[in-house]
Image (cartoon, rainbow, N blue to C red):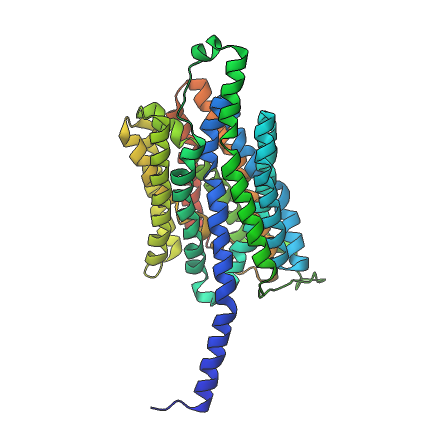
Length: 429
């Protein structure tokens, strides 16, 4: 049957609308890969810098703290800039900070000062705050509203791809495999010790320099790309965006709480993976890094599997199932021995995979003009990644058993389960 002129016009309009958001969607999805890549280098940096600077578990957890405290500090400024100047401006600022912070690893390594590494990571994370504050809600806006959660899970899947590639490809470049005991280091001359520490610190320079240059190149691409945007002008009254208006949403309040504990759980499980693998299963550092790659692969596969399952299962119900499974797996990680613990942590990664995007999309659902404010508040809650790993590290240092520290992610998954049961409600405060 021949199409009517109205049908032809509707098809052309749909095609043009789709073309207008497909390219920006692809570019924004690439950002999920890049920030996933740098985040998943942190579990490599933690054992590496612990060795290079002779750090305790608590001290090495400051790597996570320096990263995730930036989310707390910069989320509101990032949200304000994007409300005034749009998502593209926020993305551009984020990419520039990301690139500069990565390049600063070169002088940090030259200085042989742990504090300079923490400073460079803080600058990177400031850039990531802009990117995540922009990209997560932007993906939900680009395209049909009814597929927003599935679209966000798809984009976040590339975060999982980076979780596999970063430790597998870059990990061996950073980890030297040289693990000297305290006695061996004490027996070295000052010159030998300085040479050893300098070589350990220098191994991070090339990977981060290349990453920084790539990120700055991506910023140039974004600059010359036409990005559909929505700018919210501040308005008087109930129609305008406001923090008080956003926080009236029970979904958002629960989303902030759940995201705090989810990010804390993800960082705790991932950042101490190598320590758990070397301690409980007796693996060598470089072998443990390879298993960390499988951890990232499981995370990626979980994202794609979750996106598929959401076609048949409500995201909230899937979150309930996954949170319950991870509570049980956390108990096994605490009590298990040998390779069982390693495989358990990999399984936790699979079932963590859908949590961040699902919590995010549920938390900002129905916020309207307050979407960017809500997005900023949920991104601020990522500070859980700064505050909870030191708790795990402290428990490990006090008890002398890293496994006991994994009671922290167990509690986190319990909170996420509560969110899954209650976070969909629309009651107003």
